Amino acid sequence: MRKYHDMYELFRYDRQAKAFYDKLPDYVRDQIATRAGGVHSMESLRDYAENLLRWDE
Image (cartoon, rainbow, N blue to C red):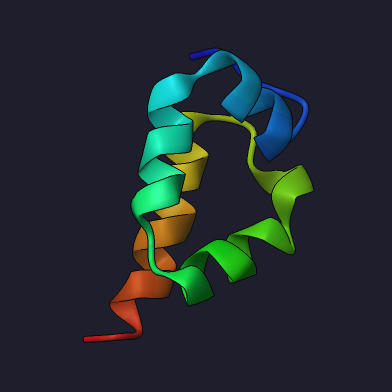
């Protein structure tokens, strides 16, 4: 698994990660963006999003 410097570098090189992020609800994207430096891979992006979405259930 490749690790990127932050979420923005991830999006630059992984279009699937960007597409996944773009489909998330606004409040989830806002929360993830506040910690962009902690998102280093598609897996970490997905995990973070799933944790935030879990609070909706």
